[in-house]
Image 1 (cartoon, rainbow, N blue to C red):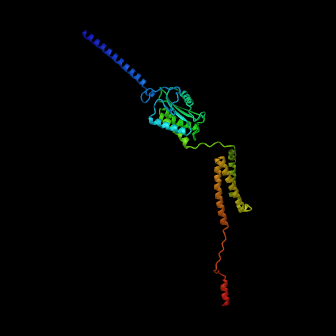
Image 2 (image 1 turned 180 degrees about the vertical axis):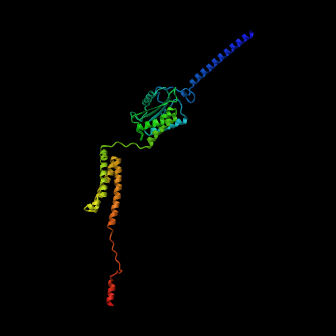
Length: 328
């Protein structure tokens, strides 16, 4: 009887201990979860301080070209971006980078970028509308799915040969895949360096043709074709059908050469690449025909040379010798 009661009391004690152990374990898990969510690195700066959630445009600061509110860039990266943005301003493209924590979706992030460019006056002069703003939005719940939003003025592009289609292609191939995986530094580096390359190392597009240039552009191709046909006629037309072969040939050469020179001038003034190519072919053909015609004429009519010597030839007696023979 006594043994049964002691067995029951020990079973109760073990049950109470197990329940207490489970409660303490659950409390420890809950405390750890609360601490981790309070110190989530996705919403904290590198020094551990909580990063602000920015949903509205803040006031413009002194160094507004590069704003890194989460502090995800190192000091070296920040200085590099600051220097590159300064180069873009020097090249005539006012720009700014803004990195923030926010839960905005794509359209809300684009609206934030537009408002930031408008309120901070990112442009070379009032009313120029030539600024560029790059906003990186890192969402609190999904830090590995960052959003890049670009806001640019109507006169911001082209920069060199960087047009809007070229910029969109670079964003889709090189920038956005890195931004979406949380690699903000590499993504922004590709975007900034590609724009700088096109702005500094590619020639700008030529100005549109004026009215007179369009007229010259339309005349260049027919003139070059007529010159080519005239040169081909010199090749195909036999010399015997010309009333005066030598004179007429040189006249046709002179006319074709004049047309070739005119075609070159018209193509250069009217910026006609096709006419320039045809005129170049005409020039090469004219030089070849001129050289071949000169060679044929020299070969057909070699210059006559008369050599006078005092030596007697067979059947002919020198006059001085003849006088001596008579005297003998």
